[in-house]
Image (cartoon, rainbow, N blue to C red):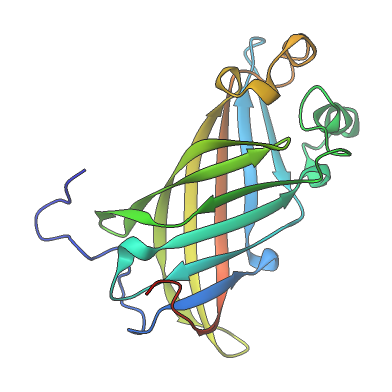
Length: 200
């Protein structure tokens, strides 16, 4: 996709330092959540309480933006313990057998206006599948305890019917809890670690 005129290279604006750096996601100021409609004309909303990850940014080459996130599946919280237990069961996330799900994107497509597409792989229940996240850079600022912080957000939609490990007779029977389309959202604040180039 072509960039809008005059917006090429503006993904990281206001600019970061020229040196590329890795940022550690701070769970205290970040959220990973989801929303799913179901055939009962209601929606299920929830968050994952435990996650970690790193964000790589290069002020000179925004297309090198990279993201790795790891989420503890059993930390799901929908506000109802019985529903959480069902979501952790073999029919859905199989949290006991697969304690983590993850997303890894090694590069980005710069869309201009501080936005990008992060294309990579999402791992759920031990199965990897191609996944694209619509990302937005939200600026940088000094941290209250020193160091540099950046804000980054992402959104994507997972269709369970296209993900074999999340579909089948058992999961289909529980569709009243989670429908086919699951919107995944994250908003992260990440702390700069040290200048470090991941690429030659």
